[in-house]
Amino acid sequence: MSAAFTSAATGDLVEPINGGAQLIGAGLAGIAVVVVLVAVVKLHPFLALVLGGFTVGGIASIGSDAQVDGVAYDLAHVVTVFSTGFGSTTASVGLLIALGAMFAKLLADSGGADQVVDTIVSRSSRRALPWAMAGVGALIGLPMFFEIGLVLLMPVIYLVARRAELSLVAIGIPTLAGLSAMHALVPPHPGPLLAIDNLGADLGITLGLGVLFAIPVVIVAGPLFGILAARWVPVPAPAAVGAPAGPGTKDDDGPGSEGPGGTGSDTAPEGARRPGFAVTVATVLLPVLLMMGKAISDIALSEDNPAYRVFDLLGTPFVALLIAVLVAMWTFGLGLGWNLKQVGRSVESSLPGVAGILLIVAAGGGFKEVLVSTGVGTLLAEWAQDANVSVMLLAWVLAVLIRLATGSATIATVTASSLMAGLVDGLSSGEVSLMVLAIGAGSVFFSHLNDAGFWLVKEYFRLDVPQTIKTWSAMETVLSVTGLVLVLAADLVI
Image (tube, helix red, strand yellow):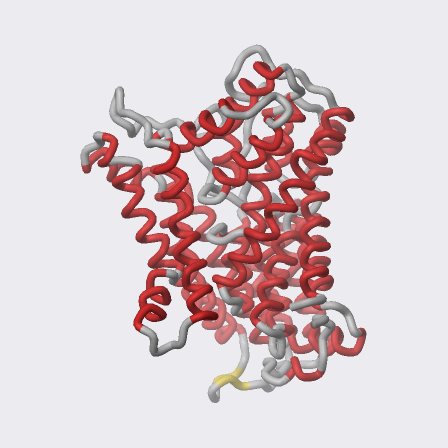
């Protein structure tokens, strides 16, 4: 079924609190405030989103006589709306981010990530290495933020490229594609989780489609595009493995690790053994399998079936990740000879690094709530109906424009999904999940000079700015466009 917007979709939209021109102006002003504060003033995205939300509500409420539950829609009400969105997003998404950070830290500290890399690379031929590294990037990227995965894998990329006598770009681009595709398309990464929460999408369906789409996306943007990128920019592997040549940065889309040069683990006891390959992979995939099991049970089992209730509980994202963390405390800690204090230290050390992303995500929820409460989404829905525009294409374009302006995938996801929230009524669960993936794909389009991740890749790969654009920026664009093509193709049959 095509997702071009129809009148059936406008049934339950929020009534606009003011005239159309004023609300559109308020929305544009709010977005402009966020863009300028992040891209020009260099203000932290948390504060930018707070001020952007108040800008939207303040301008939209001027001259309005609208009331909500008998209370005038004014700036005082905007504060209440923003706080409500902030709290609900923290409860629904913030908990998952914290659990995901704990899991990723245990994986890194235990050497489980190293075990996966060593096993896959050692069993691959020279020709298959780019494909193997794409798989490594995707697998490591499943539980980890992009920046942490990059820091963790860069020494491996150096060593593999040098030993195989291949260009650093030929090995690095497939690895980056695997990491970036997971970051953009697959829960429990913050971007997809935010869009799922804002749009009310089914997590199981979105997860299944995200993993399914990520495979061809990684293949096209990784090993296949890597062949061209390596020809355009032949970069030999450096003789020494270490930190990048220039000062490193951390992206506001991730928690920030210990910085370029390594994961900095000092938690694992000296001489502790690493977890086995099979155990590591099984532990990494555990939360994904639990959530997919819930999605399958929703389709195959009736609600009064005891098995349905079990899968429904275990597949809830919070429960699935909590179980994964508890299992990881054994497979990546106690089972390897760690004591409880060492396991606790590893878990505890994961939390400071995600404080920034938690604040950004929560403020994004408040920003979304203000946008929705003004009725801007209703106006956008009516415009899409009149123009007969595919909502999938519209969602992708909005995410692309905000990504290009701010350099932040998180802000692009927050804003695009907030604006599209009014357009999901009347769409099937599958179509709403496709919209999430369209936004995720758009949020990574053409990383350039205003994206801290651009500079991180540039320094690690010893590239100049034009070379970084030809490799990293082009790869992100290929990844984004490939994701859009898959979404539009799937939209024809879902």
